[in-house]
Image (tube, rainbow, N blue to C red; front, top):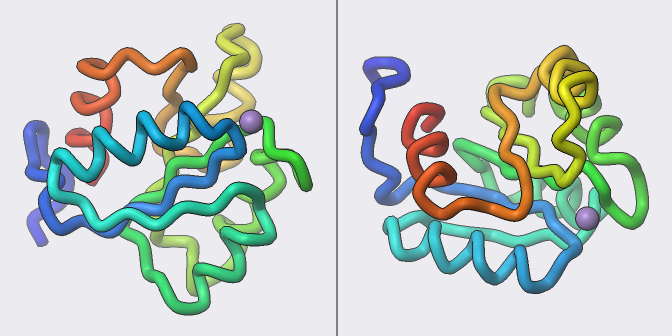
Length: 130
Ligand code: MN
């Protein structure tokens, strides 16, 4: 590994999507699979935590508005655990206000992606962080 490079390939990266919105999940999964990623999906925080027992993601995309717990709580849990602390996390959220963005980055997210997702910006951001 040579650290983060702009334009790095996404091929064969393990990525977990934590998202309860079906259409958004399908869109993100489609984009990632087109890039050659290995994708696993979780519809809530509980599923994400269960899947982490067997799937070791390089990167997680975490929706902030999840049905069981706040995505920020999940992210903080992952960043507090030694075994998941290294996983890069990009937050997915519809709350695009400046204050929200700063709050999300403060809890340890590597970046922030606003919904609705712009496919070109999305893949550019992903390549910067894998
Ligand atoms: Mn949601």
